[in-house]
Amino acid sequence: MFRVLVGEYIDDHAIAGLTSQKDVKVDIKVGISREELLNTIHEYDALIVRSVIKVNRELLDKAKKLKIVGRAGNGTDNIDIPEATAHGVIVANTPDSNTVSACEIAIGLMLASARNIVAANNFIKSGKWEREIFVGNELFEKTLGIIGLGRIGSLMAKRMKAFGMNLIAYDPYISDEIFKRNGCKKVETLDELLEASDVITIHTPKTSETIDMINKDNVSKLKDGVRLVNAARGGLFNEEAVAEGLRSGKIASFGYDVHTVEPRSECVLYEFENAITTPHIGATTYEAQRNVGTQVVKQVLNGLRGEIVETAVNLPSIGREEYAIVKPYITLAERLGKIYFQISKDAISNVTINYYGEIAEQETALVDATTLKGLLEPVLKEEVNYINSRSLAEKRGIDITVNKKDEKYKNYSSALEIVVISDEGKKIQVVGTVGLNNDERIVSIKDHDVDIVIADNMIYLSNNDVPGVIGAVGAILGKENINIATMNVGRKENENAIMLLTVDSEVEKGSLKKLRALDQINWAYYLDLSV
Ligand code: NAD
Image (cartoon, rainbow, N blue to C red; front, side, top):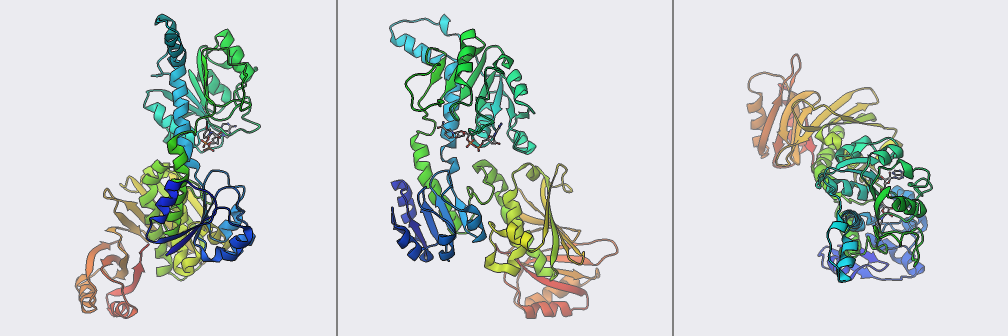
């Protein structure tokens, strides 16, 4: 039974979702004193906070059972993330809770301003009827410039692609892969985006670099009749400069959810009918408000149950759609990683993780983390989790290299290769892929081509390539009451063959000894690949 302490307010629905879990006992102590918290935290597996409770070393040192801290909200200033990481504690927030809502308001403002919906609405209600004065623009086949291709910018790209828009984006801080994944042409400079876009939407945080991104000096670079949208933060487009652009007709419309100063009753933009606005209601949806609670509960339950915590902040976060794609590779990686220390006792000097084909286009940091978790687990057991696996590996002096390759591995559309080099320079390579039915397969081991669906219990052996070996192996395992489920043989010129078997039960040392005693067998290992 996991014990969860809810130390600050979360939505009632979320509480109900948490208390209804059979494997969880919840204590709701909103406003708990620091003293009580420090005295009782050792009893809990999870802690849910907002922004008041300080999760620092003082607390973490006492939190012997703590696996996860859930932060209902975005900012994590009250949580010492490096300290939590060092304690192997996952910290997860709810950054996605209002992403869809914020994206949708930006789209709403874009459509409403392109089609004069607000002005037309007001016109009709004043008792008049006319069409010609409300001629708008289609978005179809126009160029949309997205500034900031993070969570909301990426969603925007995916959705506006469906409108048939051409997408370009400016975000110097993210990898080319993200542009590719979101179907956006990358532009190297802001000016390039300003000059090429029919519609511009901004989704950056407010920083010294992003304040006044459109300003009096660069407004002339905009295309004539450009439409602007800002549902990110007030002041990213200078209000005076936009007003000037609207007045001259350079800017056809501006849809904005955010003001430089909020709340406010006056703004230089209010005189323009084609500048439509809302009072920072991007996140004001029932869904977003409920999402904060349900998302934090989901992450906490995942963390407790050893499943992937998508919004962990002490790991790169991953979007829901991307997660669905990489998920099978996350477990494949852990299983492949577990092989090394079950067939070798040599310390590792470096690990190379190679991604081939389609999986190479994805955000794979979680796969890296589970590879390393799998690798270290046979020697570190529960000390290692996917939060601390990289830092533990690095502390052990292991060099980690990750390569993303455009080409395929053999004929597999996606593949993951792990190459481990020992201190003595010995190499052990293994390659896996995920099949159409999400079955995890080993397709190469120590450079022998094989193809076998991975099972929790496997035997890996080397044999002389002579007749009768399979029968002899089968006979011994039969006597030992070990049922062989599948078997695959890998052959290589001038080398002994290898055999991979999946079996229905664990293999005792005694049974392995009998296999090893066979003349035709050079070595044999039992692989526990359960995750
Ligand atoms: P995010 O952190 O996921 O993405 C921000 C992106 O901006 C990152 O990819 C970053 O690399 C990029 N960026 C940073 N500086 C840049 C620069 N100088 N030029 C170009 N790109 C730059 O953030 P998000 O969750 O997508 O949120 C985006 C914005 O939306 C934030 O300002 C957030 O506060 C705002 N927001 C508004 C509402 C609302 O109610 N209207 C709701 C949610 C979020």
